[in-house]
Length: 89
Image (tube, rainbow, N blue to C red; front, side, top):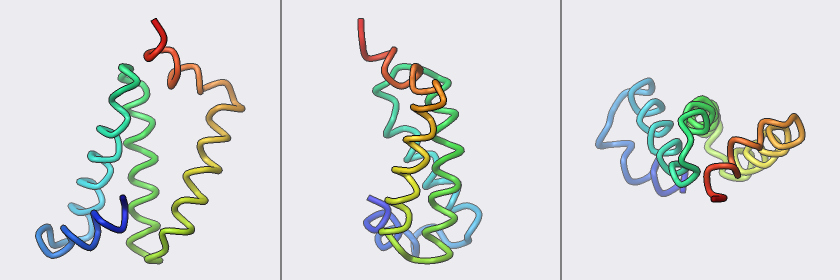
């Protein structure tokens, strides 16, 4: 997703800061299925980190690895409850 987003819209939205923030917004909206505003906040912050790292290094591999590591940290620290609670009724 990062590759598609960056390649497609980098010329449309010039400027590093605006582009990274827009990417983080889209990343957090991709997690709206969890129906929890805390998840949206967490993923927005994560999206900022992922977008910045991709912008600097142009490596989908490292961003994917980073997403996996941070996701594991979220779930092992107990914060994962916010991610699965909203989808279970």
